[in-house]
Length: 240
Image 1 (tube, helix red, strand yellow):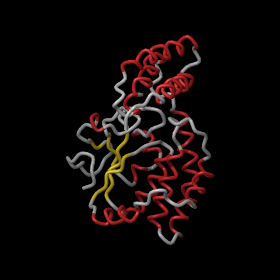
Image 2: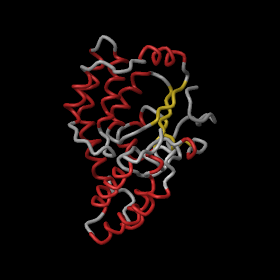
Image 3: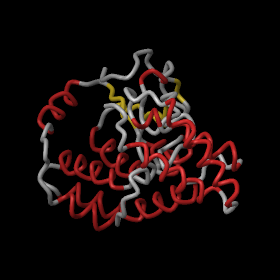
């Protein structure tokens, strides 16, 4: 994936949305937009958009002094997802294929993406996705690989989604390492949100080292466990 010209207006719009969450100071917001706009000309267009857009979140935090503009939104998303948790667990337990249903629920959690600026209704969207067919279906391959795996590395994404990740992890019945973002960025899951979602009860939480709203391999450090439990294997991001 690379950054296209169409990505640049989106980056500016995301700067404005994030800035308004961080502060009401119009002068400061204008300065954030000016600074990020000035950076666009230096973007490496061959890099993926999440890597290109890192600077906007850093600039907003630097000028506003707010390290986590999406903090309250993340907490609200987790609270709403946790309210659905017992109901979704029952759906998994009663389904003909519990693992497949848990996968569908984890996929449904992807609607909670504030970087896309797309409206969503968590409960409505989850139930709609449970009834849909996969556009690309690799479930059989996933099931086969999972049956052979001793441990699984699960890359966390959005904070509210982490509750649905928990449902899948519980169903996999494997030793799981759950990788979170190194620092707050958009509504992505960090250690705090992973713990709030209950993931500390079902997986070892580790830092990926990534400070982008994605897992950028060039940023990933040697994984380190940040919750108590088994030591983290030295292998980097892979199934093992």
